[in-house]
Length: 367
Image (cartoon, rainbow, N blue to C red; front, top):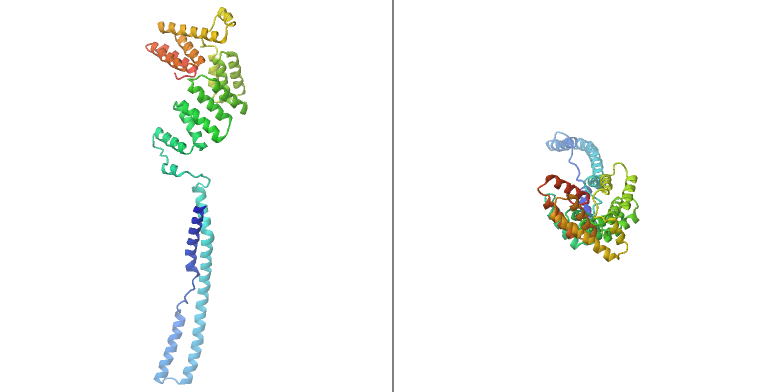
């Protein structure tokens, strides 16, 4: 408010400076050539009287006539000048009062940013430079958000950058703050679930699944949430449910949907790499086991698979089953260790390494 008051005073001072000279009275214009002639004639009459060339009555009559003509000439020259001066002064006043503000507004609207929000003084002092490295720009945004944690727009910008940089825990916090300060939406819930799953090594945990379910509640057609719910079903071993979710997505999707290839690849994957399967006898025996015993049995099978692969590391399909089994079990560190061991085992075989990387991509990991 104070700033606008200062601007108003400056505008008033500028207009006053323009109008002050226009309001001052005009000095009478200097006599023109006709008036000068008549004055010279009056002076000449005085010289003739002094020299005795004409008499006093004739001189007086001549003075009266010349004086009348002199007054008429002076009036005729002064009136047009005064009228012209008045017209120009009024035109200048109108231009100053109306034309200048109109010109200023007409110039500002296309060149200025009247709807641009205010920046804090700290942000003005640290205006971002497009030539700076990404790390520097990211650090500036983080410093700004530390001092202004309620800046919702800042969290919206920061969260996806952190996710792409692999700072998953920080991305989760940023997405939570984005929801807090910008409001709930299906897109933000799905992004938060994706960050939670990424932090868990690609496993859709119960926490991530809850976020995707919230997103679907807000928008039944949320593509990202649907895909990850299908992935959660696949990781739980419910391949039929996963296939149903993904096929429904494809049925609803437009032909040019950018995520269509990803869902098609996921459907194709359902018939490929799987977690260690149980034999029929083992499945029958597992029905009578408690949850803890069943989990222990599955972990034992996974451990035996890991032991076998250490002895024979050429089994690419076995490595992929092992990595996926650890992901389903939620053991992120073992999944990373198995991935490293698999690459070392097939490092000298270009074809097996290619197959391994392709299979990791299908699992949603970096190939």
